[in-house]
Length: 299
Image (cartoon, rainbow, N blue to C red; front, side, top):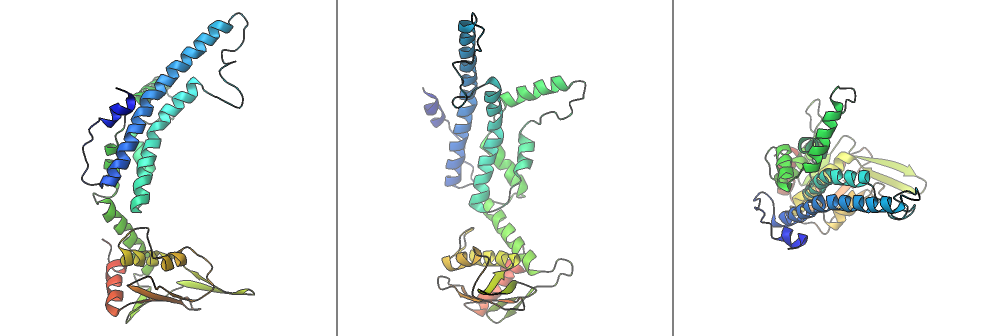
C-alpha cells in the first residue's frame, strides 16, 4: 500500500462542531502534514547516505563530499536544513488550520497562543547548567511531535469560550459595532434614530475641499457599523452587496450621497460637513431592529 493510499484509508471521526467543508480542509491538511513528517526524515537518511558515498569516493582527492551534490544556484540540501523543515511542519500546520477558520468565519484567533500550548518550547537560557540536556530533549520532542487538527480545534474553541465559529464571528462583529456606537468613558451613544434613519454623530465622516473637487471619507468606526449592516442585510460574514462593498473599499469619496439599489434593508447613506452620517433603512422597524441587535447588545 503506497503512502497516499494509506492516508486515504484513515478513518477520521467527524467533529459535529464544524461543517463538512471545514472537515474536508482539515483532513486534507492533516494527511499532508503527516506525510511530510514521515517522508522528510527519509529524505534526511538518503541525503546522509549520498554524502557518505561521495565522501568515500572523493577521499583520495581531498575534495568536499558536496562537490557534485550541491551547486551555488541549484539544489541546496543539508542535515540542518532538513531538520529545520521537519520542525517547521508543526507551526505551519497550526497556521494553515487557524488561517482557514479565521478567514472563513471572519473572527480573530491567537495563533501564537495555540503554538505555545501545542509545541515544545526551545530552551531560552543558555547559561543554565543543564542547557545541553534541555536542548537535546527539545530536539527529541520536536522530532516525535505529532499534532492532530482536533488538537488545534480544541485550542480555538477555548479562545471562543465554547461558541461555535459562526457565533464567535457574530460576537466579534457586534462587539465592533457596539464599540463604534458608544463613548467608552461616559457610556453615551454616538447615534440616534430618526424614523427610518440611523444618524451617526461625533465625526463619523470627514470632508476636505481640494482644487480637484470635494473629497469625503468615512471614519473607521462608521465602516465597522456598515460591516454590521452588511451582515444584517445578507446574514453572511465578509460578504456585502456590491454597492456597499464599493463604499467600504474606498477612502476618498467624491460624493456625499450614496444609494444601495442592490440592498433590501438598506437604502442610502449621506455624509455632512459637520461629521454626521445618515444611514437610511427601508423602514423604521428595520432601523430599530438593527440598532437593537447590533448597537445595543453584544451576543
